[in-house]
Image 1 (cartoon, rainbow, N blue to C red):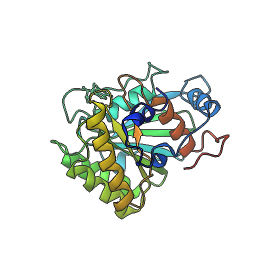
Image 2: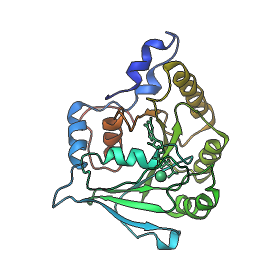
Image 3: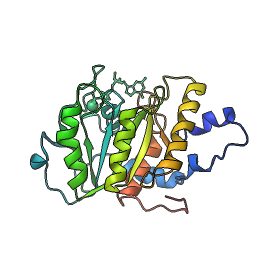
Length: 244
Ligand SMILES: Nc1nc2c(ncn2[C@@H]2O[C@H](COP(=O)(O)OP(=O)(O)OP(=O)(O)O)[C@@H](O)[C@H]2O)c(=O)[nH]1
Ligand SMILES: [Mg+2]
């Protein structure tokens, strides 16, 4: 549950370097601190804030922001819903039909940070992506990290490479989250992971070198993801000497 990669590790050949898969390794104490940030209270309200169809309608916010991009149906809204599982009153809509999220949806995590769910790319939605997400990525001042989601069973697609190239062009820090790891067998998942790992290593300079594995359905990797997000936004100061 905490480190989904550890389940896959026995399937890996001994010659494969494990280091890039576990760079961010917070203590349990850090994870507990992050869990608290994801609990809503009267003085720390977690809530849907607003939606925007164009960059000019996006709210001006000072607090750090993270956003979620990826192909339609990859599981962006589901991941946000899983991250907010401790506050089920925050409704995040997901759908089997690709192209469901049509606006940029802003969610506030108290005064700690904002999370933005984006329309997907790759299927029926390139227009939304080009008109909304691209200007957002190019101009959003308080954006501290983009989470680029890739389906673990499908692997890297051309449209993902285009999105990565855009982040590289802007020189904007991003991190790859591998989704739906419950849906495919370890063999297919590992093959896709190693390909991804190789692309990150050889073709990127702004991508965080660790891939984060999640299943929003079974909550695998969600605790680590919460902690990483709190760390990136400065909401949790890590107690130990893990690398980021
Ligand atoms: N098995 C499994 N299914 C998932 C997981 N995450 C999402 N799904 C399913 O994938 C479908 C799409 O999920 P969404 O979260 O709506 O995908 P999205 O990326 O927000 O899609 P758009 O808004 O269309 O861009 C839904 O049927 C989800 O239930 C997961 O971790 N495991
Ligand atoms: Mg969505």
